[in-house]
Length: 258
Image 1 (cartoon, rainbow, N blue to C red):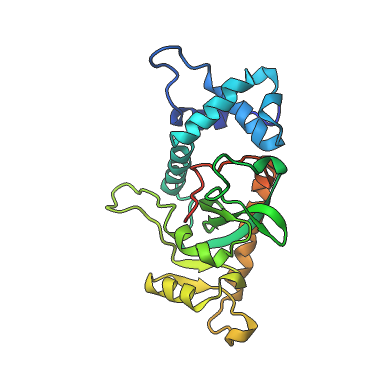
Image 2 (image 1 turned 135 degrees about the vertical axis):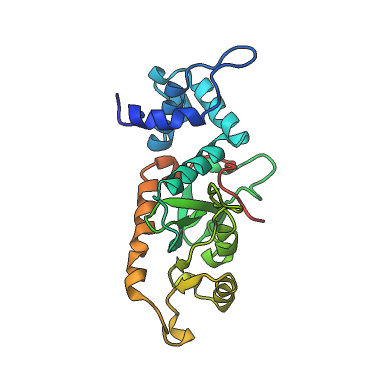
């Protein structure tokens, strides 16, 4: 078994969340090699046509990836895994971390039919690319993602980032969505953001810029834990299809605010 494939324990957790194998018409090929082929492409960054034959036909792997994306299968899997993690006490709601990272776009990402407007692509000083706005819980697990063009500022997308990622909890009338504290860097230090967080009862650990006065009630010890989201970004970029964008179109898993 190569390193891109699932272990048996991982597959036992994932398999119940996938669509059933049967159905009307021609039955699906077995999910495991197909999903393993998808993971292989995401990790290596290779073109779909170069998927090794041990995973099956590349057309089947690519079409199932796109079909499940359009049908929201990946989104539902992500939400269910979050729910299971919360149920087992693995999600820390005492503090969440926010950050943004730029993904350089390959030349293949340009030229979407109908133009690139709404496809989270833009030009910044770093070049042509996409920015992923990320929220992680207190242990460094991802909770929510938002995409924008690479030139957009992180502060513009904090509000939509905090309005997604709700986790259903058994026995509770409403899902959990708000952390008790938000930790971010100076890029989020704006009066409008502080007012927005205060209005929702969210404590703030965001250092003030030099032109904004003293850091009153700033908890430096908590701020040091922000390395958890930076390490999360590093882990995500081990998947070369995340480190570099090759696709012309965005995925429904990642919301793109107007």
